[in-house]
Amino acid sequence: MNLLSEAKKSEIRRKKRYRIVVWQEIICIFLLLFYIGILFSIDYILNFQLKTLEGVNVSKEQEQASQEIQSAEKEFQTVNKKIADTSKFQQEHIVWSSLFIALDKIIPEGILLEKLSTANQKISFSGRANTRDILLNFQERLNASECFQNANVPLSDLFAQNNIDFQMDVEIKRSCLKPGNL
Image 1: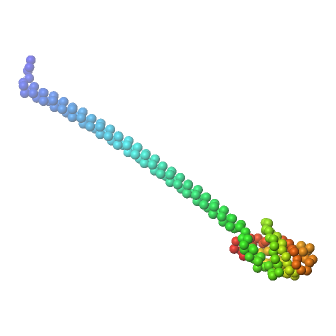
Image 2 (image 1 turned 90 degrees about the horizontal axis):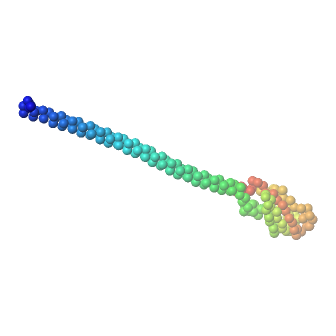
Image 3 (image 1 turned 60 degrees about the horizontal axis):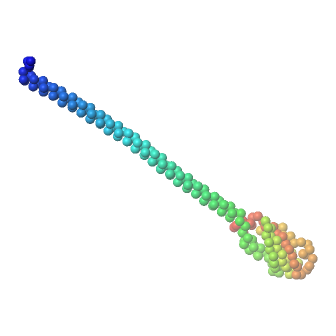
């Protein structure tokens, strides 16, 4: 039996529809909040991965820069070693031309050098002297010079008075062996 009036029935239907619409809206709001939460989570995860990748890129760039620096340092070390070797060579280099110029200034008229050889810090030469006095003068000049010492003429070379074939050994002073010392 239908004891309710039509107006009451219509109000009950309207309230029932209202409750259904409210529940649908609540469910939609929860779904919307759920999707918004998912979007924020995805944003957070993507930002975290981006920062991680940026950190990896920075570390790769730093590693590459470090490798470039190490490569440059090795190149500098190689160049510095070559410079040091060249400098050492130049310091130990014997300037023979300067020694021969100094020897040329010492040789008096009447001395002819025919053969010259060097070994370690000695010069050996043989030649011809016009007189014994010229040969002895040459020996004295060598001993008195800044670059030579211990000039020795064998006694057997001093027996003849004129046209003496001689052989002489002379030590070179260490100070004259280096560049720029003459």
